[in-house]
Image (cartoon, rainbow, N blue to C red; front, side, top):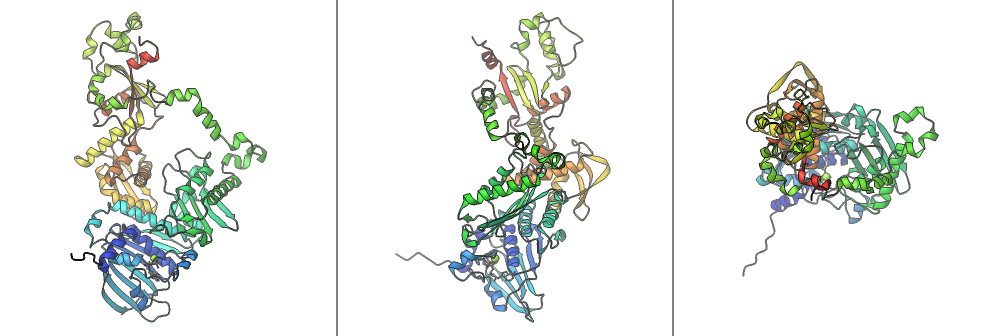
Length: 630
Ligand code: ADP
Ligand code: MG
């Protein structure tokens, strides 16, 4: 038998290995930016085209490379940052594995220009598919420029896996922000399709946070600073009022490296626990510095996860540092100046609703009655879908109608009663003409707590969650708009100018064609500004800014939480954003419209996010509840 084992050719081995480091354009952005930081640059430019699919280029004014190094840097395991395994425990640089450039060169076309500080000439190298195509001396500024073109041109399967431009751009913006946030003392610029997205001047961390996340953080950041022999933490948390419904403005750095740590995130959230609503996220940019010997950053190829020698110490430390900062700063504005400290210390003031209190009410039998399964009012999931096929039957008010009981027949007919009184049931005992009446003559729905719509049906009644139901209606409407006919636009009397954060403007630019189909008449106006001339006909005018900002928030929320395509994401975001909220008073007509439209949907029973839109209460169950069953 012939031997069958081969050594893989270098370029294939590199391509396979590259999969770990370079998954998408944003991975290259991260690696190239980190290399520039490691090279001691003070000014770093990021240039991309076509969401990085066509070009990712980073230009820095750092130390540059010699001719030999320029050639060497593309070899696998070629690094200037460690020499022995022990160096791993003293790492102060961003990179150290010597894999990034080799990986990039294996899956893209790369052009490198570099000149070492003090050297008269620079080096130009062109390399693709791990093969050097050209190498020659060149004139270039001190520092390094690396351009990665046509990512995955030689691995079509992986190129096809890249997401829409909006999604890839968002990943790039995230990586850029993470590096830029970690090094406020360096200048960063970011240009996408020849448009400047960011120009970040050197400055303090606070200035950097505001430059990236927006002016409204200006007076809303609380300083965090604690030092011990073992570790230091410093940075900022947003005041509770800045907490958002969506994640995204949370940054954790360990020795200046951005990391994702659900564990430490939890520590911060618990410090905020009673200050912000559940399901909302405060801003934080926190830097932990500790001896590199106490952390292992080499547990993950992209180094976003790390291992600490002692997690628990870190958790407790971070939690108390944030608590301390919040307490010192006395984040409740009303308490800031008006009350004397004695009052502020009172439990009732400092702890509005403790965990024990919450627990106590959750254990109460009253609470359980309303939340436990197998209670009559809980929706029966099993036959829920089969009911839906016959939703029309639900609305034919039949002989079992509630109103036909003795009380109904005792009531005198009241011809001039207002519309919301139970007319059909009274009528039913008098004659049968109600059977022919149109929908408006049916039982009028009733709004409950400005949140639910109670509507009587043949077999009992249903309780509709107005917001979830409207979300479903809009979702299907918008989907249809994208599929066959564009949504009508309502032209605004006065065009509105929208000034957006740079990263948001870039996102909107990518979503523009779809937004137009969905009824937004808007175009870019330079400098992160858009002019909005019209909005989808079902949005109230005057709300253009809020509607688009809400849309962006939702869009980011979905791209963080779910893997769904961009259009789906956009449609869901719009539905969520434009749905009638809980708390809105509805006229009977509006409620009836919601009911009619909901049950004309192809999937009326759940919201696009998977929540129930209504719960049905059956007469039989009601009878049981009232002990009428037998
Ligand atoms: P690592 O950063 O892990 O060392 P890379 O593949 O990213 O590995 O880079 C390999 C080497 O190339 C680096 O160790 C560094 O010496 C050199 N290098 C990369 N980018 C630059 C740059 N922008 N300026 C100067 N040297 C660089
Ligand atoms: Mg590197």
